Image (cartoon, rainbow, N blue to C red):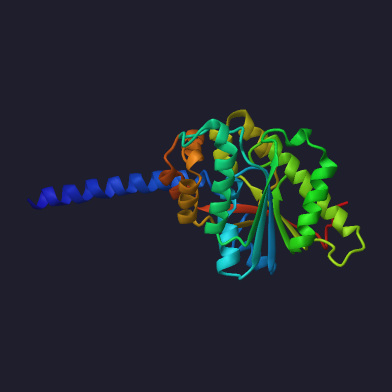
Length: 281
Protein backbone atom coordinates (compact mmCIF):
# COMPACT_ATOMS: atom_id res chain seq x y z
CA UNK A 1 0.00 0.00 0.00
CA UNK A 2 2.81 2.32 0.95
CA UNK A 3 4.70 1.57 -2.29
CA UNK A 4 1.55 2.20 -4.29
CA UNK A 5 1.06 5.58 -2.59
CA UNK A 6 4.65 6.56 -3.35
CA UNK A 7 4.22 5.48 -6.98
CA UNK A 8 1.07 7.55 -7.33
CA UNK A 9 2.85 10.57 -5.88
CA UNK A 10 5.73 10.11 -8.35
CA UNK A 11 3.33 9.77 -11.31
CA UNK A 12 1.41 12.85 -10.17
CA UNK A 13 4.65 14.80 -9.82
CA UNK A 14 5.74 13.80 -13.32
CA UNK A 15 2.36 14.83 -14.76
CA UNK A 16 2.51 18.17 -12.96
CA UNK A 17 6.02 18.72 -14.27
CA UNK A 18 4.94 17.87 -17.81
CA UNK A 19 1.89 20.14 -17.67
CA UNK A 20 3.97 22.91 -16.10
CA UNK A 21 6.62 22.52 -18.78
CA UNK A 22 4.04 22.68 -21.54
CA UNK A 23 2.45 25.73 -19.93
CA UNK A 24 5.72 27.67 -19.71
CA UNK A 25 6.69 26.57 -23.21
CA UNK A 26 3.33 27.90 -24.42
CA UNK A 27 3.77 31.16 -22.54
CA UNK A 28 7.14 31.67 -24.20
CA UNK A 29 5.28 32.00 -27.52
CA UNK A 30 3.69 35.18 -26.14
CA UNK A 31 6.71 36.66 -24.36
CA UNK A 32 8.68 39.70 -25.51
CA UNK A 33 12.10 39.91 -23.80
CA UNK A 34 12.59 43.60 -24.63
CA UNK A 35 9.35 44.63 -22.90
CA UNK A 36 9.36 45.88 -19.32
CA UNK A 37 6.29 44.97 -17.32
CA UNK A 38 4.20 47.89 -16.05
CA UNK A 39 0.81 48.16 -14.39
CA UNK A 40 -0.44 50.64 -16.99
CA UNK A 41 1.26 52.10 -20.05
CA UNK A 42 -0.89 55.22 -19.79
CA UNK A 43 -0.01 55.56 -16.12
CA UNK A 44 3.70 55.22 -16.92
CA UNK A 45 3.40 58.02 -19.46
CA UNK A 46 1.33 60.24 -17.19
CA UNK A 47 -1.49 60.29 -19.74
CA UNK A 48 -4.81 61.90 -18.86
CA UNK A 49 -6.59 61.84 -22.25
CA UNK A 50 -6.25 58.89 -24.61
CA UNK A 51 -7.44 58.45 -28.20
CA UNK A 52 -7.29 55.17 -30.14
CA UNK A 53 -7.19 55.34 -33.95
CA UNK A 54 -8.39 52.06 -35.46
CA UNK A 55 -9.74 50.63 -38.71
CA UNK A 56 -12.36 47.99 -37.82
CA UNK A 57 -14.82 46.97 -35.14
CA UNK A 58 -12.97 44.53 -32.83
CA UNK A 59 -9.58 46.24 -33.38
CA UNK A 60 -9.99 47.51 -29.82
CA UNK A 61 -9.70 43.90 -28.64
CA UNK A 62 -5.92 44.20 -29.12
CA UNK A 63 -5.69 47.09 -26.64
CA UNK A 64 -8.51 46.55 -24.18
CA UNK A 65 -6.12 46.08 -21.24
CA UNK A 66 -4.61 49.49 -21.96
CA UNK A 67 -7.97 51.25 -22.22
CA UNK A 68 -9.56 49.45 -19.26
CA UNK A 69 -6.67 50.28 -16.94
CA UNK A 70 -6.37 53.84 -18.28
CA UNK A 71 -9.95 54.42 -17.17
CA UNK A 72 -10.13 52.28 -14.03
CA UNK A 73 -6.66 52.87 -12.57
CA UNK A 74 -5.53 56.19 -14.05
CA UNK A 75 -8.84 58.02 -14.32
CA UNK A 76 -8.06 59.04 -17.90
CA UNK A 77 -10.60 60.31 -20.42
CA UNK A 78 -10.65 57.71 -23.20
CA UNK A 79 -11.92 57.89 -26.78
CA UNK A 80 -11.76 55.84 -29.97
CA UNK A 81 -12.05 56.21 -33.72
CA UNK A 82 -13.13 53.20 -35.80
CA UNK A 83 -12.88 54.10 -39.48
CA UNK A 84 -15.11 51.34 -40.95
CA UNK A 85 -18.14 49.32 -39.90
CA UNK A 86 -16.50 45.99 -40.81
CA UNK A 87 -19.18 45.13 -43.36
CA UNK A 88 -16.83 43.11 -45.58
CA UNK A 89 -15.90 40.66 -42.85
CA UNK A 90 -17.03 37.08 -42.46
CA UNK A 91 -19.35 36.07 -39.66
CA UNK A 92 -17.93 33.48 -37.34
CA UNK A 93 -20.46 32.31 -36.22
CA UNK A 94 -23.31 33.79 -38.28
CA UNK A 95 -25.53 35.98 -36.09
CA UNK A 96 -27.57 37.94 -38.66
CA UNK A 97 -28.10 38.85 -42.29
CA UNK A 98 -24.84 39.44 -44.14
CA UNK A 99 -26.35 42.61 -45.59
CA UNK A 100 -26.72 43.92 -42.02
CA UNK A 101 -23.20 43.02 -40.93
CA UNK A 102 -21.96 46.61 -40.95
CA UNK A 103 -24.68 47.69 -38.55
CA UNK A 104 -24.17 44.60 -36.40
CA UNK A 105 -20.43 45.13 -36.07
CA UNK A 106 -20.81 48.85 -35.43
CA UNK A 107 -23.14 48.04 -32.55
CA UNK A 108 -20.70 45.42 -31.25
CA UNK A 109 -17.84 47.94 -31.29
CA UNK A 110 -19.84 50.59 -29.46
CA UNK A 111 -21.00 48.09 -26.85
CA UNK A 112 -17.50 46.72 -26.30
CA UNK A 113 -15.94 50.17 -25.89
CA UNK A 114 -18.68 51.02 -23.39
CA UNK A 115 -17.76 47.82 -21.52
CA UNK A 116 -14.17 49.13 -21.38
CA UNK A 117 -15.31 52.43 -19.91
CA UNK A 118 -14.55 54.42 -23.07
CA UNK A 119 -16.07 57.90 -22.89
CA UNK A 120 -16.42 58.65 -26.60
CA UNK A 121 -16.36 56.37 -29.64
CA UNK A 122 -17.03 57.40 -33.23
CA UNK A 123 -17.54 54.76 -35.93
CA UNK A 124 -17.23 56.05 -39.48
CA UNK A 125 -18.52 54.40 -42.63
CA UNK A 126 -15.49 54.20 -44.90
CA UNK A 127 -15.33 50.95 -46.93
CA UNK A 128 -14.09 47.93 -45.03
CA UNK A 129 -10.98 46.70 -46.86
CA UNK A 130 -10.88 49.87 -48.95
CA UNK A 131 -9.16 52.42 -46.72
CA UNK A 132 -6.01 52.54 -48.90
CA UNK A 133 -8.23 53.74 -51.77
CA UNK A 134 -9.87 56.51 -49.71
CA UNK A 135 -8.42 60.00 -50.16
CA UNK A 136 -5.76 60.15 -47.46
CA UNK A 137 -6.06 63.91 -46.99
CA UNK A 138 -9.74 63.44 -46.13
CA UNK A 139 -8.91 60.78 -43.54
CA UNK A 140 -6.18 62.94 -42.02
CA UNK A 141 -8.52 65.93 -41.83
CA UNK A 142 -11.17 63.91 -40.01
CA UNK A 143 -8.65 62.48 -37.55
CA UNK A 144 -7.23 65.97 -36.93
CA UNK A 145 -10.76 67.23 -36.21
CA UNK A 146 -11.35 64.40 -33.74
CA UNK A 147 -8.00 65.02 -32.06
CA UNK A 148 -8.86 68.68 -31.66
CA UNK A 149 -12.16 67.67 -30.08
CA UNK A 150 -10.67 65.08 -27.70
CA UNK A 151 -7.26 66.78 -27.14
CA UNK A 152 -5.44 63.54 -26.30
CA UNK A 153 -2.00 63.61 -24.71
CA UNK A 154 -1.60 59.96 -25.77
CA UNK A 155 -2.66 58.46 -29.11
CA UNK A 156 -2.80 54.67 -29.57
CA UNK A 157 -2.45 53.40 -33.14
CA UNK A 158 -1.07 50.74 -35.46
CA UNK A 159 2.56 50.66 -36.58
CA UNK A 160 2.19 51.79 -40.22
CA UNK A 161 4.68 49.32 -41.72
CA UNK A 162 2.96 46.24 -40.29
CA UNK A 163 -0.47 47.18 -38.98
CA UNK A 164 -0.09 44.58 -36.18
CA UNK A 165 -1.70 41.96 -38.46
CA UNK A 166 -0.52 42.92 -41.93
CA UNK A 167 -3.97 44.29 -42.81
CA UNK A 168 -3.71 47.19 -45.27
CA UNK A 169 -6.55 49.05 -43.54
CA UNK A 170 -4.57 48.95 -40.28
CA UNK A 171 -1.44 50.16 -42.03
CA UNK A 172 -3.32 53.04 -43.65
CA UNK A 173 -4.83 54.19 -40.33
CA UNK A 174 -1.37 54.04 -38.75
CA UNK A 175 -0.10 56.35 -41.49
CA UNK A 176 -3.10 58.64 -41.08
CA UNK A 177 -2.59 58.90 -37.31
CA UNK A 178 1.05 59.90 -37.82
CA UNK A 179 0.17 62.47 -40.47
CA UNK A 180 -2.57 63.96 -38.30
CA UNK A 181 -0.18 64.32 -35.37
CA UNK A 182 2.47 65.94 -37.57
CA UNK A 183 -0.12 68.37 -38.96
CA UNK A 184 -1.24 69.38 -35.47
CA UNK A 185 2.36 69.86 -34.31
CA UNK A 186 2.95 72.25 -37.21
CA UNK A 187 -0.26 74.21 -36.59
CA UNK A 188 -0.76 77.48 -34.73
CA UNK A 189 -3.74 76.33 -32.70
CA UNK A 190 -4.06 76.00 -28.94
CA UNK A 191 -3.83 72.21 -29.21
CA UNK A 192 -0.61 71.05 -30.85
CA UNK A 193 -1.08 67.30 -30.60
CA UNK A 194 -0.25 64.50 -28.16
CA UNK A 195 2.95 64.01 -26.17
CA UNK A 196 3.19 60.28 -26.91
CA UNK A 197 2.23 57.92 -29.72
CA UNK A 198 1.72 54.35 -28.52
CA UNK A 199 1.82 51.49 -31.05
CA UNK A 200 0.27 48.10 -30.37
CA UNK A 201 2.79 45.32 -31.11
CA UNK A 202 1.96 41.68 -31.88
CA UNK A 203 3.72 38.74 -30.13
CA UNK A 204 6.71 37.86 -32.28
CA UNK A 205 7.21 34.14 -31.67
CA UNK A 206 3.53 33.19 -31.91
CA UNK A 207 3.18 35.09 -35.18
CA UNK A 208 6.32 33.52 -36.60
CA UNK A 209 5.03 30.01 -35.87
CA UNK A 210 1.28 30.33 -36.46
CA UNK A 211 0.96 33.39 -38.68
CA UNK A 212 2.24 32.02 -41.99
CA UNK A 213 3.68 34.47 -44.50
CA UNK A 214 1.60 37.32 -43.10
CA UNK A 215 2.95 36.67 -39.62
CA UNK A 216 6.52 36.70 -40.90
CA UNK A 217 5.82 39.98 -42.68
CA UNK A 218 4.51 41.56 -39.48
CA UNK A 219 7.46 40.36 -37.41
CA UNK A 220 9.94 41.67 -39.99
CA UNK A 221 8.27 45.09 -40.11
CA UNK A 222 7.43 45.97 -36.52
CA UNK A 223 9.68 47.39 -33.78
CA UNK A 224 10.48 45.70 -30.49
CA UNK A 225 8.13 46.72 -27.66
CA UNK A 226 9.40 48.54 -24.57
CA UNK A 227 6.33 47.86 -22.43
CA UNK A 228 4.24 44.87 -21.44
CA UNK A 229 1.10 45.11 -19.34
CA UNK A 230 -1.83 42.96 -18.31
CA UNK A 231 -4.14 42.08 -21.17
CA UNK A 232 -7.09 42.03 -18.74
CA UNK A 233 -8.03 38.55 -19.94
CA UNK A 234 -11.54 38.70 -18.50
CA UNK A 235 -12.19 41.81 -20.61
CA UNK A 236 -10.84 39.95 -23.67
CA UNK A 237 -13.35 37.15 -23.11
CA UNK A 238 -16.16 39.63 -22.50
CA UNK A 239 -15.14 41.44 -25.68
CA UNK A 240 -15.42 38.36 -27.88
CA UNK A 241 -18.81 37.61 -26.37
CA UNK A 242 -19.90 41.15 -27.27
CA UNK A 243 -18.36 40.82 -30.75
CA UNK A 244 -20.67 37.86 -31.33
CA UNK A 245 -20.25 37.91 -35.12
CA UNK A 246 -16.48 37.42 -34.68
CA UNK A 247 -16.47 35.23 -31.58
CA UNK A 248 -14.61 32.34 -33.27
CA UNK A 249 -12.06 34.54 -35.06
CA UNK A 250 -9.21 34.02 -32.60
CA UNK A 251 -9.68 30.25 -32.42
CA UNK A 252 -9.71 29.99 -36.20
CA UNK A 253 -6.57 32.13 -36.46
CA UNK A 254 -4.49 30.31 -33.83
CA UNK A 255 -6.15 26.85 -34.00
CA UNK A 256 -6.56 26.90 -30.22
CA UNK A 257 -9.61 27.63 -28.03
CA UNK A 258 -9.89 31.17 -26.66
CA UNK A 259 -9.49 30.11 -23.05
CA UNK A 260 -6.16 28.42 -23.83
CA UNK A 261 -4.90 31.30 -25.98
CA UNK A 262 -5.51 33.80 -23.18
CA UNK A 263 -4.11 31.45 -20.55
CA UNK A 264 -0.84 31.84 -22.46
CA UNK A 265 -1.27 35.30 -24.01
CA UNK A 266 -2.08 37.38 -20.95
CA UNK A 267 -0.08 40.51 -21.81
CA UNK A 268 -0.29 43.35 -24.30
CA UNK A 269 2.87 44.82 -25.83
CA UNK A 270 3.57 48.40 -26.81
CA UNK A 271 6.21 50.53 -28.51
CA UNK A 272 6.14 54.18 -27.48
CA UNK A 273 7.32 57.26 -29.35
CA UNK A 274 8.04 60.34 -27.23
CA UNK A 275 6.88 63.09 -29.56
CA UNK A 276 8.63 65.82 -27.61
CA UNK A 277 12.04 64.17 -27.95
CA UNK A 278 11.34 62.54 -31.33
CA UNK A 279 8.68 64.51 -33.24
CA UNK A 280 7.13 63.26 -36.44
CA UNK A 281 8.56 65.03 -39.47
